[in-house]
Amino acid sequence: MTVMNERPTIIEFVEHYCNKFADKTFLREKTGDVWRETSFADTYREGRILAAGFMALGLQKGDRVSLISEGRNLWILTELGILFAGGVDVPLSTKLEETNDLLFRINHSDARFVVASAQQLPKIRKTVPGTPLVEKVIVLDNIEDLQENEMTIGQIRDMGLKFMNDNPGALDERIAQIGPDDPANITYTSGTTADPKGIILTHRNYTANVEQGVSVIDIPNDWVMLIVLPLDHCFAHVAGFYTMMYHGGSIATVPVGKTPMQTLRNMPIAIKEIKPHIMLSVPAISRNFKKNIEAGIKAKGPKVEKLYNFALKNAIAYNKEYYNRGGWQFWRWPMVKLFDKLIFKSVREGLGGRLQLFVGGGALLDIELQRYFCAIGIPIFQGYGLSEATPIICSNSPAGARFGSSGRTVKPMDIKICDSDGKEVAHGTRGEIVIRGENVMGGYWKNPESTASTIVDGWLHTGDMGYICTEDPRYLYVTGRFKSLLISPDGEKYSPEGFEDGLTDGSKYIDNTLLHNDMNPYTIALVVPNKEALKEYAAHQKPGIDLESAEAKEIMLKKIQEEVDSYRKGGTREGLFPERWLPAAIVVLPEQFTEKGGLVNSTMKVVRGKVEKFYADRIEYAYTPEGKNLLNEKNMASL
Image 1 (cartoon, rainbow, N blue to C red):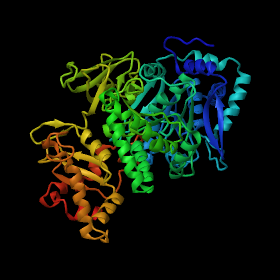
Image 2: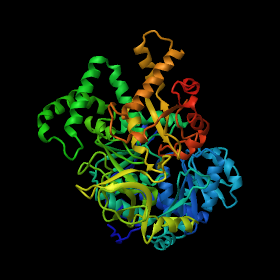
Image 3: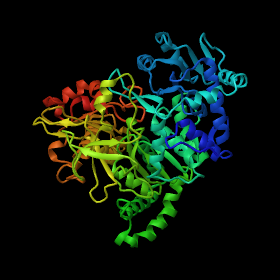
């Protein structure tokens, strides 16, 4: 077996573990009705063949290749081919709909080649005329209507086999030129402006972050992970396929449908068929799972629902904040076990029956949601990171968790909390999270000014707020974004995420929340309502009522107000936030925040600036006497 250097490249890392676990299954993909398996050894071999094909095409060390496709084996194998040939992969989100978004990324990265799936090809064909440096478009599927300067990945593979035969040793010579500090990816921020930044992640950034991740979470080598998140993000790279490769586990991807909606419908089928042990999650996916579970319980009738709620309450009380489970409540344990067998086991069967845990990232996850999933026996262990840190900075895990925190910080890595003047503050004091380690990005592509202001003396300034736990300094609490701070009229700054996530996760009547205050007279809440739940509530309050009537909508709006006011004095969530921060007006929005509309990014995080811009007229209206009135015509119309 190969021996890796202390600072291995991705190529050395892949070679080492593909030799170590050669005959084990690494990739699982559904073709037709059959899940086909690819071994570690075959994964490595196919990566080399495609690398030789890219070399035959003329790819030089350091050349950029844009890659846009749904999650599949060929996504992973193609990226390995690009990296093995010394190229730099520029992964693009399939959510990018506008030609301008694609145009900017492809041109800004100076990509020579673009790799696209058949489903993404129409967008690329519209974009390529504006990308003078692009020489070829490589299609991951066999299609009949190839246009000029297009070819298939199958042709690249054939070229690779011939190149290896005609040029023995050429690929290994290229690989020998690639060092740990060479770029592997340029991954673009989702951004709220027209010009997102290109984050340079090096080979060593990736291999270091995998090593760091192992310090906080361990995975048995027979586990299977189903990846439901986009592969263009480094979270799926590190926490997904490189971590599973390190442990000798295997990964499966959701079968790609003819449309994005079909792919989404394939997810529950894939979960039941693959029976994963572990999945990566973001809060939006977690909330959907919870709502689907509760809908299934409700469908079984009031007796089952009552028993479920009792079992849930008992388990949540027993688990507390995870690290302090049980204690004097040892008497709850027999009931926890009994109800788990009677109720929660069947819930887990709906998720394949083998699911042990989720690893959560992408955004802050409300503590109530963490308690909920732990209670049903599939804990979501919240982590935290950002692309500039490749991305993992900390994570909870079965070996150590504090619900409400983002977990233990990875090792080796330095971390400190700084005030607005850049001075380090004591544990327990909030400030900006600043880190130093081998997972810190190589910089921003063609943007030395932003690089210099973000990485200072080797320390990455994350732009996120948090504090280090005083009782156990390995735990980090993340409290929000500096950039998301709201500013009250007196200049006081406060972070809205805790309220937004708490209200969204804690109310079945509200699907999303965003607070706004930019030195305005008061804070307002932009609320995306769950219209079905509200209609059900109105029908229960007044049986036979016309749900489209003004009277019904008034009942619904007052219910929304009641949920928002639960944080005020006398409410069920009283005291969690200062009264002066709480919203004095509510804007009820007519539809969900969507990726297509650009209001959420690829990890389903709401893009605050774009929402505020899109609903600027409603925000302005909310600061008028008429708009401040809950029962205004615009709120009524939104329902």
